[in-house]
Length: 115
Length: 156
Image (cartoon, rainbow over all chains, first blue to last red; front, side, top):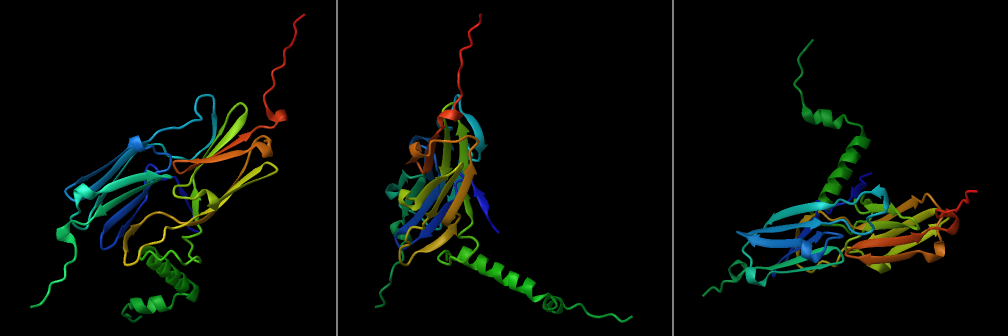
């Protein structure tokens, strides 16, 4: 009923999960090489940009079906709170880009002791 | 003719019940989608994603590439029956940690299946498949009779 064709490298669908420690952003970027992805953080906005370049087989190969989207993609996410920029980490494996953004100390929930 | 005040609620109640139940189903889907409840396998969303493929033909083989980011190789099955290649599997959602909350879910999860009829017969025993960067590569060598043949014709 709601089947949709998923060639999303031009779009890079992502999930955003928040826990007490921070935010985890997971984006799908199949066929994209590590050196072709750029992740940046500026004024509380996370940017994921990159390019999916054509892979082998090229040359003498004749394309029968072409559904993969090649080319540049760009996503931006406004983060719900301040993060510890120095502790942000990103990892690319199996076509998934996983960015972990720990909350800044100031943004963590604090319990106030009543005297 | 008398004027009757329009009552939108009355119009709604006059809708046939199947339309209302469809609306309910949409509300449910909407709800489960935005609350990250993807454990409901009866939902139309979970079983309805179609991974994109590229299929190329070379002189001696076919190459099928399917985008399967985050899919484990144990969860993919490739079968060849006559000239039909079928790739099926499941994309499982990582276990969410306790006390976490999803702000956005755009990725699709669940099972998928796609079948392709290849334009020439292949050597089923020599099919090779591997994963790289979340893309499944399947190489299918053409059967001898399907390969282009070069015949030297002697000119007398």
